[in-house]
Each structure stands twice: as structure tokens, then as C-alpha cells.
Amino acid sequence: MGAADLKAISIYKFGGASVRDAPGIQNVASIVERYAQGRVILVVSAIGKSTNRLEQVVRFWFDGKRPEAAEQAGMLRDDHHRIIENLVEHPASRRKLMAGVEPYFSQLFGYLNEPAPPASSYNRLYDQVVGLGELMSSRILSDYLLTRGLENHWIDARECVVTNNTYRDARVDWDATRMAIKTLITDENRCMVVQGFIGRDVLSGDSTTLGREGSDYTAAIFAHCLDAGELTIWKDVPGVMDADPGRFPFARLISELPYDEAVEMTYYGASVIHPKTIKPLQNKGIRLRVRSFIRPDLPGTMIHAGAVSGRSSPYIIVKSPQALITVRTRDFSFVAEEHLSFIYTELYRLGIKVHLMQQTALSFRFCVDDDPFKVVPLLEALSPMLETEWEGGLDLWTLRHQSDRTEKGLLSGRKIILEQRATRLVQLVLK
Image (cartoon, rainbow, N blue to C red; front, side, top):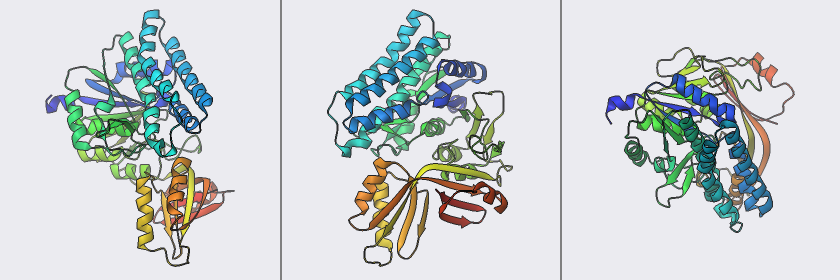
């Protein structure tokens, strides 16, 4: 495949909200038929809230609550069957779509027939189970597109995205991934369908995941490795907003952003784009467009190197739920470099990202996602050397380019647990 052919490839990423039901999947097909020019790779997330339900399955399974886990799995199967029944009318087409997802449900129920595994294997088995959601949704979309006469080629992302074994936040082996993608994407199919979020550990062959909401990152990986002309992420909002419109009714669209501002927004927790998405695109100068699958006629937001209008755009980002962890030495000595090295070694080992940190002479405080399956092991690892305490259920607010007047109005009635200020940037942990 020549360079010109690769440049003709566009990447479309559709999240769970866009394929949450039969009308949503039909709408995705209409968008592909109307807007996709040349060759396109469709990167698909799990249907609706399937990932949440699969996470529930895993938690019940590990807690030894097998009937509850099986009930959640059965509800998930019913959801997918209901979508298929509403998606196509012809019995033969329905049977084909059902047959496409049934192996993954057999695999899911197969896990639940095994004994409750030890807690130490949680992250690895999480990836084997939770990644099934993307395999199901992509198979349904691919088979449905065929019923509409849109030829496509279904691709298993685990054969393309090569990673290490940092389960739930796997690191990509870029050289191996680039080679695998260019080996598999060699035919002249106009349309290809692939899963977001998942990859495969090169050594064990286990499925891995790229971090929660990691389908955006998958799309960026394919765009980077194929030198695509543009990546479009289809969302349920008009584009990148300066605040969450569900929380702040005054939120406005940002029409364009430079890469560095987009990186800042994702770093601080803007959920519209996964944090790892921008860098692979910036390295190749690939444009990123965020558009609405509800109003596909709108232009959305363009993220590219030449953007200037969004460089000083004010925005508000809320990340929740968060946990604030405080560590101290047991003898009231300073928290020194050896303590910080120990803390960060454990954070890296457990795949935990720090969103805010603050150090004094006698303590070190940091804010992380409030995930008990990561926070509890971290506290257990730190407690032999350090005193630890934590508080969960908190919000982390990041206000950039905001005025003091706006800030005071937003925080009415909220208790500030931790505060950090820099030029044109305020971060607050709120209760």
C-alpha cells in the first residue's frame, strides 16, 4: 500500500453513546454512508453502558457472588439481543447478527463457571472480561452494515495493537503495532471495522485494555500508524465545549484548538477526548475533528497545529469521583526523596495516575481516581513505611483562564479540601 493510499484513509471513532440502541447504530451507518469519503476505518466502543455492566460482572465474580454476576451477564445478553431484534427485520439477518456475538457471551459465561479468582489477578481478568464489550459492538455494526449493502472488513484489534502486560492501562509497543497494522490493512476494502480500547500482550497473548474510555486512543494509534489524513471522533455534543454542558448550562463550543491546549484539557480530565489521543496525532500533524453524531451537519471542533483562536479559551473541567491520599512519615521526619521514590514506584506498579499533588515538610498529598481496586492495594503497599489516610467521593475542578468573579460564583456552597494556584490556572479538590 503506497503513501498516497494511506493518506486517503480517514478514521471515524464512534463511542458507546452513538451505538447504544438500534436507532443509534442505524444513525452511525447513515453517517458513514453520507460523510465517509474514500477509505475509512471505524473504531467502535462498547454499546451504551456495557462496559459498566461488565465491570459489575467482574466485581461480583471476584466477591464470590456468582448468581449476581450471572444475572448481570444475562441482562447484558438480553440488551444486545434486543438491539439486534430492533435493528433488522429479516430472520436470516437476525440469526447472522446473533451468531456474531454469541461466542463472546459463551466466553463470558465460561469465566463465571470458574472458581472465584484471587484478588491479585483482578486487573488481568478484568481485561479479559471487560474488553468483550467492544468485540460484541463491532461485530454487530459490521454485520449490520453488510445488510445495508456497505461492504466492510471486520478486524480484531488484538491482532493489531501490541502492548505490554500493564493490565487496565497497557503500554503500546509502537514498532510492533505499526508493523501489525500495516500488515493487516493491505486490501482495498472501502470500510473496515475495528474495536477501540483493547489490545494484546505480546508475551502472554492475553487481552489488554488501554485505560477507561481508551477507544479514542485506539483511533489515534491507527491514524498515526497509517498516516491518516484526519481522525473524526463522533460525540453526543457539538464539539469540544468550554465546560460540561450537563453540569454548566452556559457551556459554549470551542471552534478550534491547537494541539497543546487540547493536551492541557485532556491532562486535566476533559472527558470529551481521552488523554493519550493527541500526542500520536501531533507527531504526524494529523487533524482531529470532534463532531456531533446527533447533528452531523455541524462543523464541530478542529484540533490542529495552526489553530490560534482557542489558545486562551477559558474552560472548566470537573473530574470525579476522586480520592485524596495523604502520607506522612511515622517519626515526623521530612517526606524526602526516598519516600517519594517509593510512592511513585507503587503508583507506577499499580497503574495509578496522579491528577494533583502537594508536598509540605511533613506530608505528601495527591489526588487519584477513586477506584477501590487500585486505591486499597496502594494504601496496603505504602502503609508498612508510611502513615496513610484517604478520603473518597471528591471532585477535582480545574479552572483555566477564568476570572476570580466566575470562580467565586461557581464554588458557592462547596468545601475546598485542597487548593493549588498557578498563572491562569486553579485546581481545587472539593467536597
